[in-house]
Structures are given as structure tokens and as C-alpha cells.
Length: 125
Image 1 (spheres, rainbow, N blue to C red):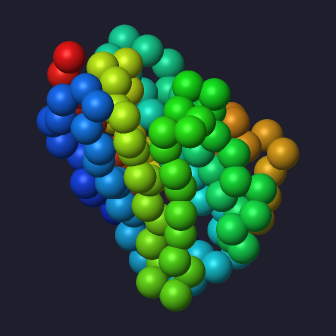
Image 2: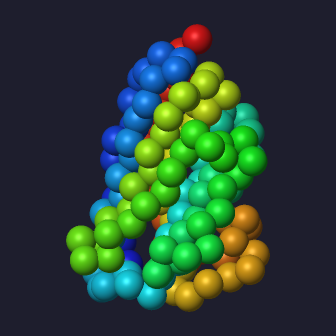
């Protein structure tokens, strides 16, 4: 079992940056694919970013490409999401996710076994 704890959310203005962190515990997540999803109020949960255990095959949603960067430190069991040039439409609860191994269906929330509790990001205009 892997437990994920998200942190780093907050209230910022449009154009600002935030850095989300996810701490994994329970076992080494070296071979886990890790990523981030988000869910805005009244919206469906959507894929944001994913990274394989070795840092390869990093993928982003089109809406965040060029603004968000996912990274991981396997030695520290942490995953981060650097978010720059935030816009009001980025307002959502952000969830760290994980699964053992890789799935080609990485954009689907259904393939992830482990979820953080979520951290709220609010971007004012």
C-alpha cells in the first residue's frame, strides 16, 4: 500500500505561481507511475500531468502544457507540480495519483489505485 499526502495549494492571483507537493509513504514508489488530476467545482475530474517511474514519458494536458512541470524525487518519495502563469480556469482541487507500472490509458482516473486527499488551488482574476 502507498499513502499519498498532497500539499501546497492556496489562493493566488492570475499570473502567479504555486508549487504542489505529494509525499508518498508506505513503500518505495520507485516503480510507480505518478501524476496529478484536478477537479473544479461542478466539473468532472480531469488529467493534468503524469510521469513514469524513471522520469520518462512525461505527459501534460493541453490546457497546462508549457505552464506546468511535473517532477519527482524517488529517493525522497516525492512528486511535485510546478504551476506557473496560473489562470482562473486552473482553480480546482488538485490530487496526486499513483499506480504500479505504466498504463497507456494514463489520462483516465480509473487506472490509478492511489489518491491523495487533494489540495485546493484558487486563482483570482
